[in-house]
Length: 403
Image: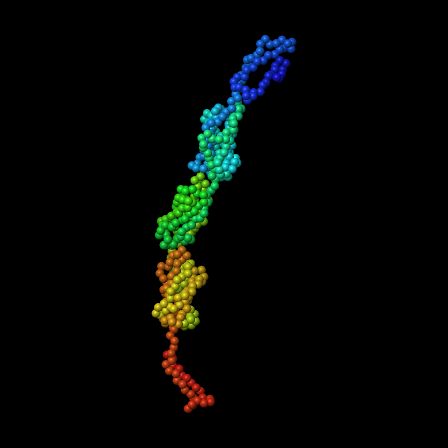
């Protein structure tokens, strides 16, 4: 009880949770200072009417869903939907990731109609993988708090999958080059992944064109068409950009590790110089050298040699590289090699594998001839100065007449 003024008083009572719902009734009596009692108890208010509402609200049809087609990942909305049994104030929804941590982004709460509510949170890339959990706190207009809701009514669930797939390998079948023979047919790009489900599409982009394949057991092969290859620019280097996402929508970092040069121009010969060590013609033991100067960098040439009548005895040709793109081929003359001009036939290919159109069979300068013919003697005349036999002081002379 309380006294407001000399003739005004208050009587207050605290409502208990066990008090029954309904209008609050009262019966009050009092007496004046002389002890004269009020004629009859006061049982009705002249103004004001208070009801007890001790009914706690509950939630029904609680469900959870995500906006994507599969598991939730970065950017996907996760939505809690529920219906209150009576009018409630704005609920507080706590939504947690697979590790039990409150999700990174804030929750948006909306009363969509009547007593139907939604709580929406956008998945962040930092939210941990696993099953999403939640807790909904709420109260009615009288302040009665409902029991925190932590379960769904429809068996729905949402799993976060923020794990991005990776690449195991990306390999272009032609290697570092595509040449003028290889671009006549499609060339495979062989791809292996980690963490990509069957049926997911890989897209390999080359020169703004996309080539696709479908994952099976974390692998697939994209066919780079002949038409696509022939549309490339000769002498230009290209890099693939390969992309894939898992079924939850997590994208792998684009793979740009595989590149090649499109080279369809065959090398040509600018000079071929033939020479021999020593003076004069070549004979037994002399080394014949052919110096080749291709129009571009090439691999080791292949040369065969001929003597005056056929293949030279020495087939162990020695090759060497001089300068950036020049090569030498050397052969040693054998005593059994036949007299005559030294012939040769050389071919080579550039680094892309483009072969020279025709073998090099003539020198632009130099001409080596084999001379393995040994001289003979036709006559040998012996003489002495003076007459008779030679004796002290005589000069002995042999006159030779070679062939």
